Structure formats: structure tokens, C-alpha cells
Image (cartoon, rainbow, N blue to C red; front, side):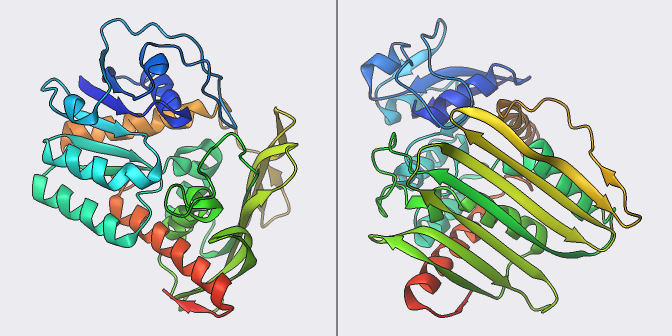
Length: 347
């Protein structure tokens, strides 16, 4: 059994806790939170743009800490799950690794590439795993696409377009601060940057057009430039002012013998599947694979299951790899530079 301590009880901390309840081989043995109400188990103030709302929790048998250093001193914990704001990821991760704990840290890995390198160096020095919770490749639709690409089921990968747009997250106090969350580029689009890196490798340059809100990108479209000029990859992401479309993500992935299409949104608080995962085949068929439950929490269960597997085996996870997460962060910063400079930027 892998004993887990969760640091931070915001929306993602709650989602992670919910996922651990369904994950074999793991149990939450401790939580750390500065808000005494949430620490006591009243999570009704917690909300996000998908999944369940917060509720009153029964936390019998769970150690509760108001200070991270106190939780890190708990000898009964094997892994620390860091769900703190992004500006706290680096210091919390390094402290946990120095304390001899494996780490699963929410995305983004952190806010700066220097801190990302510091985190990875601490992992190497401690001999403990650093995993970043980029769980999107484990969502059924994205996982189908990942397997289709890596197995070459439909032949060579030709390109893709990715979309991730939200209503302005007014429920998040620090979303637009570059030194706290990083805005849509670092806190939202990072998912697609990671998935693009996973599927296509690292591009040699990026070209982005968009508008800024202060020092962070608000809405943008990016073109990823690879050594192969026939590889056409782009993405659109950002926040809109209207609150009626809380979330949307979509993709079209182009392969030699098929095109994969998917489009999902939350409209007025209700899920809307505009385009179920669809495979357009070379012989003209329209195929809709059976993917099982559409519950988004299940992707987090898969994420926790992968983290637990890695901890038990004490081997790195290729899906939750820190280097991939660092590369996604690098891409985000290069795209922001392209927007503000009006030029193509080398990666």
C-alpha cells in the first residue's frame, strides 16, 4: 500500500482525494491545508469547472497538518501529492524530495525553467521519483489517440490541431498573475503543449499570435515548426469573457490512413459532447470507438494508478515524466515570447 499525503485542498486537491478513493494500492493518510475549515473536513467552498462540488468529508484516520514541514516529517508517508498553487510547486517539491518522499506534483511543473531544473536535480540527488500530473493523455479520447499514434495503427503522423478554451475563471483569485498561476498559457494550454510534445517530439520553433492581459497571454493561436516541413501542428487556447462556456477541449489528429476528431464542452454547467471521438477511415467509414465511462475523475484514477505503479516499482513513469513537463513549460514560455515579439521563436 502506498501511503499518500496531499498538500493543498483546493479544487485539484479535492479531485485527487476523490480519485485516490477509487485507486487500488493507495490511500490518503495525511492532508496539509492552511484553511482550518477545509482542514476540518468542510469542503463545500471548493469548486471548479468540471467534476463534483465540494462537500463535508469524513476524515477519520487521516492525519491533518497546517504546515507542510510537519507533514513531510511523517514517517508513514511514501508519496506527497502536491496540489498547491503553481508558484509553490518548486519549493514544496524540493522539500518533499529532500525528506525522502516520492512526489506527484500537479501541472504545471512550476513557473520557470530554472525551477524545473532545480526540481529534477533534487529528484536525481534524492533517488526519489518526481512525477508531474499531466493526466490528459490518460483521458479515454486522448489515450486512444496516443495509442493510435505510438502503435502506428493508422500509419504515419501528419499533424494535428488542438483547442482548449475556458470562460474567465473568476473563481480563481490569482489566475492572471504571472508569478502565481501564469494565466491560460501556463495553467491551461500547458495540457496541449504537453500532449503535442508527447506525440510529435520537441519542435524547433514556435510562431504565436494572440492578445495579452497584462503580462500573460489571454487568447492565442500557435504554430509548431518541426524539422519535417510537412508536419503541420497548431493549437488555439485562452479565456473568453462570457461565462456560458466554462470549458472546451478538442482535437483533430491527422494520420496517413485516418483522421481522429473529438470536441467536448461544458455549457451552462452541463456537459455537451459536440463530437464524440470519431475515426474517419481511409475507406470512407465513420467509426466511433467504445471508450467506457465519460466521468472525468476516472482519468485521475488512471493517473494515480500509474503513479502508484511507479512508486511500487521505483521506476520512472514515461507518461508522468518530469522532463516532458519541463519541455511543455519551455514551449509555453517560447509561445509567450513569440506573441510579445511578433516573431517566430526558436525552441
